[in-house]
Image (cartoon, rainbow, N blue to C red; front, side, top):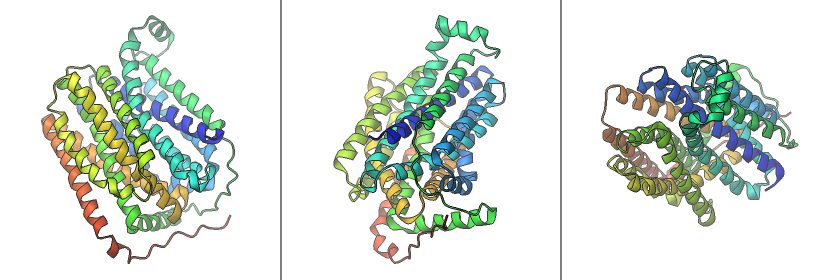
Length: 419
């Protein structure tokens, strides 16, 4: 792996680790301050709101300015969100700020990968990026669990917390997350210039919206792009909701603490890594649509989870669920990134992907928070989530089977403006 690519992958992993650790710390802050538990999913919703609202702008920014510098700026914005929680600002508002940084970061990192890696190795490189992204989600959750659990009782952590001006037992946890953002920013500075030409884009609201609307049409009307975009959109929404469902299930059914529930999610990372490696070894880009049926199996596994009441059974179940997900999602992501690069500019295609995926995340988290607010039983929530995945994948499989008719639609890639 080239130095620039290694720095990019490392920076993405550390930044994602901090994002997800911050989520657990913020949830602990809500609990410490006596807030309602159904507000927890809204933390994730506030974080993802910027992906939807700023999608037309951040895609253009990624194609206009040097991407490594843009990633450095994005980590600085995330760090500001972390500091706002430390200063006593409501976590919902602070997560909205951190979400702005994440929205800027995503199209820049994926676009930079296409500039650093030759086309014949792009799928492999994106596979590494996807594995580290998903791994950061789960391992970051584990880190957050450690920061709000065992670490709070360590004498060095207590001594450090005593000298901090913040009046909270979570002050050390917040400073640790802030340090991770600093490491991620430093790694961004190690990424060499790609030498790619930047595009001169008109940044007027009307021009941005027109380009973004056309980019949406290009991806959604292409048979392979729309299939993979539909799959990743559905699974990002379901995955974000499942993260909270697993935390609630582990505490209610398995009797674990928030910290212990976060550790349990680490087993999902083990499975995801194994599934992703197997997919990278045996599934080619041309074969990616064949793994669609696996999405139905994953949807059927979700409701079974809530009936488990033993950690001994839950642990291998988490590994299996992660392996199925890694084997399924990584080829879909690789296919979508390839089609997006062919049909559109790197920044704009990722911005469209982020918009669709995070709009689904917002909708599913809002539904989950609403059902929690009216005290829906956990197993019913899991059933609704699982059947949503099954039905969504089923529709995409049916639609792909009719792809011959979809191919009749013209696919017109955007013409890049001259520098």
